[in-house]
Image (tube, rainbow, N blue to C red):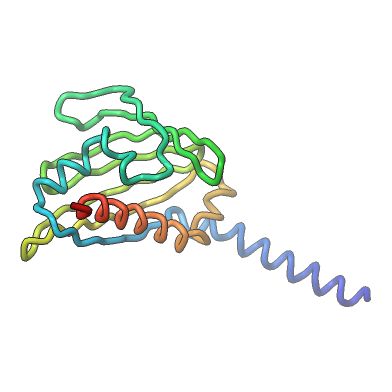
Length: 172
């Protein structure tokens, strides 16, 4: 029995070292998701950036409060109340870039997680294509170690939001 305990201890130590090394080797988790929407680019971009409509396609979003509205949009800050599996969370969303009908970049902060969502909009054959490039980081070293292991979950959630947005726009 003592031999089995030593093997389990050594295996646990190796797994712990691999987990802790993740935070040293992977400083940010990045990925990309896309959607095609059968609506004109002008309409898609306008609705996407209208904070009063966010709750219509983000089911977890409970409220949006404008903290700071800046002329020209860039620098505007929103406080968002989100419900995730019955737990309420507050997120701060700041607009970092805004090029009408081309690009919108948001910077999110939820607790110790920092996320940059860079949306590109283009049109091809009367279809609007949204490409979302995401970068996630954390202030917490242990959380930074954990983020890469949840990349598939993040991709799935972000694709779901884009799918919700598409369904919302194309429901007519």
